[in-house]
Image (cartoon, rainbow, N blue to C red; front, side, top):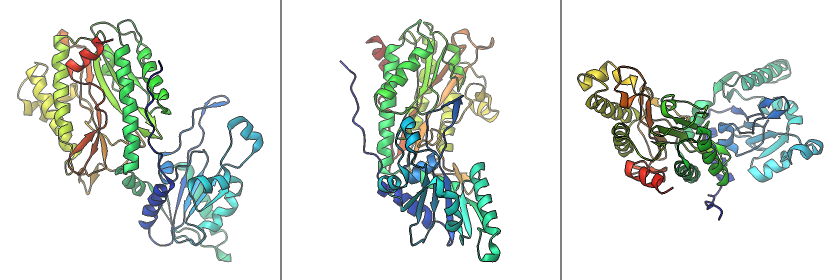
Length: 445
């Protein structure tokens, strides 16, 4: 019997993309414009490319799926405020790479006001930007900045004939990233689906785990489930770290053999319609925690569950992190991995020998999603529609001064959490994380 296939949520509609563009344009001063390039194909080796993935900001405003596109927003333009440039229709190339939408398809399928193929781009851009005082673009994008400089230079060269080049460039990214930080209901539906796929993949990997398999076997189980459920694949490079490899935060080699008596840490998530899932679970290779592993694991789990419960409107990521640091440090002192007073070990940051990273990050179209963490120099209060991870961990080095039963043990537990009007929703609850649940699941293999 084939595995179950989850029902797909509705795709985001053109009305929402239009509304996003409207919000951005309404935030701009008069006589401004936005220039935003899409992503291009990236060479993998010789004459093959990596699978195409659209730029997240470009996707957020258009949903347009093809490479080498360019978006121009022109507030107040009577002929249309949203202009898209896209790949030319070329039957000889389409026979190799598939049908391109072309200008007519872009208007028909994606609801932009006007579209032109790239063959017309250079001839039209000067006219479209003539008279726009401030040009907003992603200033960190060197190619976008070079194009904007070129266009301004060409318009300046015609100034005696009445051309009016942009007088200033401004960064569009902070404005866009503020919009992206709070998710709509349509976005949350896609993120729930990405989380559900990711959760099923983690459960599948747990059930498959046994001593003697390689880390890449578990990676294969994960990524098979991602694709089976219609995901484009991993939202980031899957981490499968057995034993001491779990102490390497971004371990992606995934080549070692899994050993009985070790824990294995999996940090992996599916991408669905460009939205990311992000889950970490740690569990015993042979299905049963040792006494030392259980003590460390339950320390991390207890702290993680308290941090998740603290997610609500008005809380801050700094508060969540401080709660986690307090709880982990107390536990490390109780277990004898740190000595002295708890507050002293927090103040001198001794705990950082075992806990190196922050507790949370934003999640969305990027796995480490955009949006400022501080406003006016202060930690940003959470508000409904924000999505974040909660992922404390402990990474115990294999050093001689560590009790032998704890050496070389890495544990991280991560869930994806939406801030709601009354508290929070855990998107990734479908993966067991309590000791008895994990042992029962693995015992049922």
